[in-house]
Image (cartoon, rainbow, N blue to C red):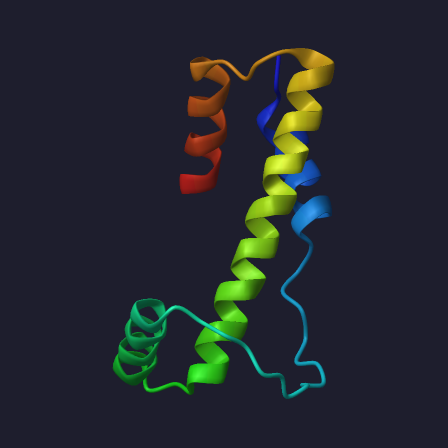
Length: 95
């Protein structure tokens, strides 16, 4: 059975703390026009730069992928996470 505290520690170990501001590198990308327009609107609403919005989105995607790998690894070793286990974890996160 997946334990709430154990899984939270495992999750933190995979996702880690938020990264400190690091050096930046200018790149050139080709992006779908609709996605770019939506990101520009979001950046404007948040009063942030497009670069900040894109950087945050990329970091969020990397964390999501790491989390998927953690869950897949756990389920391969222990079996599928049950609804009861998932509810226990969600309740802990909401505390």
